[in-house]
Every structure is written in C-alpha cells, then in structure tokens.
Amino acid sequence: MPNILIIGGARSGKSHFAQAMALKLGKPVLFVATAEAGDEEMRQRIEEHRRTRPSDWNTLEVTAHIGSQISEKIGGAKVVIIDCVTLLVNNLFNQYSDLADQPIDASLIESKLIAEMNELIECINRTGASFVMVTNEVGTGLVPPNQLGRLYRDWLGKANQMLAQVADEVYLMVAGLPVLIKPSK
Image (tube, rainbow, N blue to C red; front, side, top):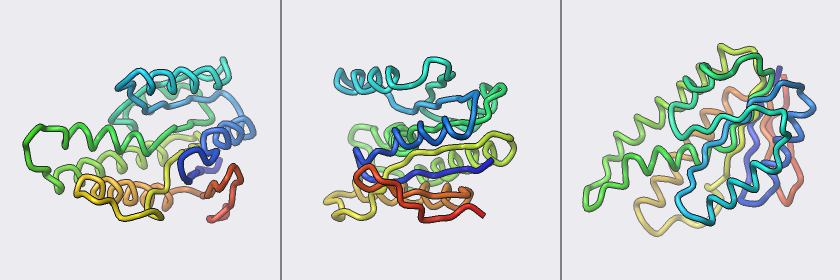
C-alpha cells in the first residue's frame, strides 16, 4: 500500500484530495487531526472539517507524539490520513517557543521536531497501513521578516523533506489540481 504526501499552499485542495485518495485506497480509515482550537474561528474550522469526513471513519485528535499515538489507536485501519503536518509542527513550535520573554532554544526545538518526525516515520514503516499525509509548502513565498517565522518555515521544510523521503508518491496541489511530483515505484 502506498504512502502519500500531499503538499501545497493554503486552500489548494489538499484535504479534499487526501480524503478522495483514502476512499480509493480502502477502509477502514483512521483520520488523524492535529489542529488545536486556540480561538473560536479555529474551533469552527475544526468543526467544519469534522462534518466533511465520512461518519464511518475513526478519528484520532492528537497534537504531539503522533507516531506512538497512531500505533496505539490504529486498530485494523488500512488507511491513515494525517491532516496536517503543518499544524503538528506548529504545535511543537508553540510548545517550546511560547515562553514569554525567554530566548528561543532553536536547537532544542529542532531536535524535538526531528524526534517527532522519526517517531512518525517508524510508525509508518512498521504498520501495514497506507499513510496519506497533508502538509503546507511554505518555502516558495517571501522570507519571513522575523526569527520565529524563519525558524518555523525552516522546520516545516525539514519535516516535509523527511516525509517526502518515505513517501511512495508526492503530490503538489495547485488550485485544486494534483500534480504528481514523485511517482510510485
């Protein structure tokens, strides 16, 4: 079963395409949601995403240690959707950088990010399920004007590269259209 990475900009159709891919790959499906409702608008977005998922899919809401949590909850799932890696990296980033008036320990955050991605990759490699992972491409825009923005862009880029290496297929979403950039072997 293939492992698939779907990458693109905001509102490019990544989540919709991931769900369509999962339906083609088979059931049962485990949907892994990484968003946190930090405010009312985000809570509404999460609720809308819940409404668009098929009711027979199992949902796992996690903000960190995704690989171990998937391993515990995968059950008999043939397909695991992770939506999305962007928010997973954001959760990790906020956990270690949201300390008021404290300098950012960039090497600590980077080591935590690499450990998080390695844990996920180990999970992917040891399960028999097909993984469909959704993430944003943030490296094609302007250079962020501050250190936090640049670090976040760099770390998400690192996470994307790590996951693209283990993916059999990588799709770039542009205006709702999937462009295959890494063919299946």
